Image 1 (cartoon, helix red, strand yellow):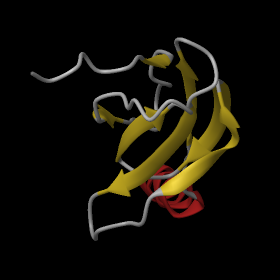
Image 2 (tube, rainbow, N blue to C red):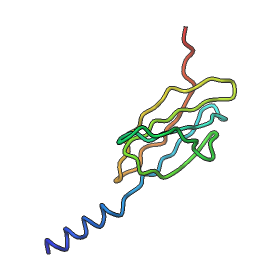
Image 3 (cartoon, rainbow, N blue to C red):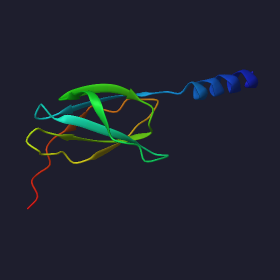
Length: 100
């Protein structure tokens, strides 16, 4: 019985799991970018469709995301830990307050 459980656990780990991420911008029209965090420095990617709202699956343990609007304003970068066992709540990106 222990061998069967060990084989099942190993198969589940080897199969890999992904997390479903939902991101939207307020106001609409922001271009969403993200990158994985962890083992190495991953490159920034556009989330497609990349304006206003997107959903995608990822296997990273943590992502950092931000949005840029056509007028040049940007949101703050948001770092979100991810889990294979539950999806994170929807991420809402808003323009950062202007710096003085």
